[in-house]
Length: 121
Image 1 (tube, rainbow, N blue to C red):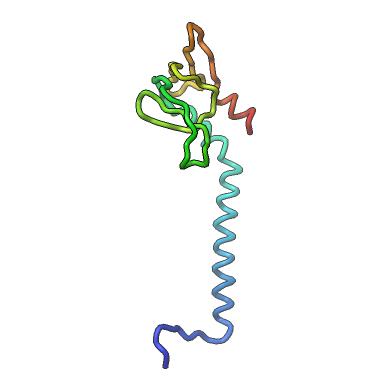
Image 2: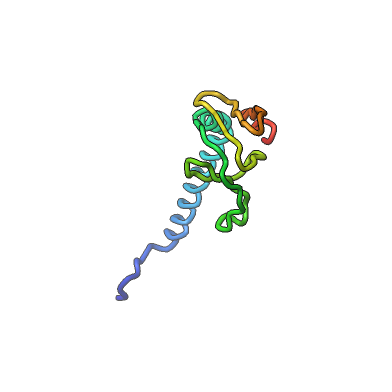
């Protein structure tokens, strides 16, 4: 008798592997279908729930994220650069509004986040 090994009936190990594979396929299929149906709504909710009243203090390449361009805001947060911000830009976006207002050199730039999402996807 060997310790640390479980003895299965012949053929049961194959059935366990098939059951686990089917279970994983069902989970992945469920996630794919959910994303296909609700993905745009989830993204819309995320974009509309953003509230930001801050200014850009730095734009840099994040070494930890494969040198992706990042923007650092005056409130201390950093995120990937998705719009052509410049250092010194003041950004204002209210919760529930899809438009982000960028104040740059006596100019107001409107950045419609939902429109940008639709155009890029």
